[in-house]
Amino acid sequence: HERMKLSSDSLAFALAGAARALAAVEAGNALPRALAEVFAARATPAPARGAIQDLAYRSMRRWGLAQALLRELAERAPAQPRLRALLCCALALLSDETPAYAPHTVVDQAVEACAADRELQRAKGMANAVLRRFLRERDALLAKVRQQDEARWNYPQWWIDKAKDAWPQDWQQVLAAGDSQPPLTLRVNRRKVALEDYRAELAAHGIESTPVGPSALKLARALPVAQIPGFADGMASVQDAAAQLAAPLLDLQDGMRVLDACAAPGGKTGHLLELADADLLALDQDAERLERVRENLQRP
Image (cartoon, rainbow, N blue to C red; front, side):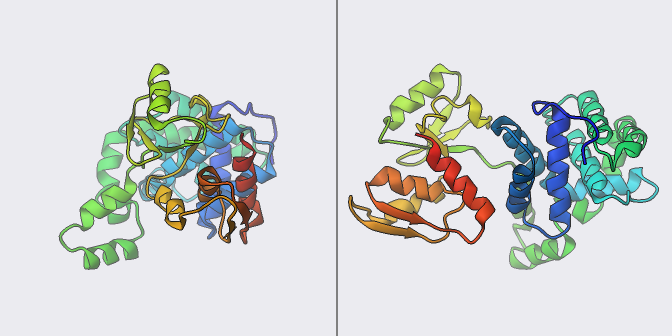
């Protein structure tokens, strides 16, 4: 679909990739699978994959708001799913109270993403007008759309209603927690380095962390894995603290045979191999996501 080649380290490239994934989500796909298909279809370097994934998840956490804003800003919804997704992704970034990018950069790069796409090239003027209008009327538009439950909470109405029924006193806190960005937690490979030694290594690089488990360090600020010391050498992996509790429950010993029958993306698989010298077979019904397992295990 590309009309001109975008640099893989540009925000425009990341926006274009995120828009493809988000359009697939709108069509009924789960986001992890949609991202895997985007990465498989294009030559996407690891840093760009991280940027695309970050944008996609940021946008999903503000999707109801972004869609409501687009309805206000466009007389009729764009016909192309990828264009709708691109505009919603940009609006999600522009409406964030703690923006990751300067507003003019988001607008410029969203227009560049349109210009690089054969199907969307003619819409670059419309995209520019919609996004610049949002910047001019930002406060008034946000106040207006946030009167709608789906825009305020970023969940479909049926889910909001279920949350109210299930937690009548706490439903607002529950929904707000789901909209917040989760912490980035690392699993330290204690075969290679002690937890406190690795924590000191992070501190030496200006990365603050807190121990939250025997092998877990929660970073004070999320950052791309390429910036994490020793990540490429297998000293640490990204894995939620709760997920790190699973592998030790097996009480794995050297020489045991283990079947990991639902392995993707490979966090627990790698953890098992760090705990013991075992004969492990990793399977998954999703061949594309199984590639993530291979990538994780290829690190030393």
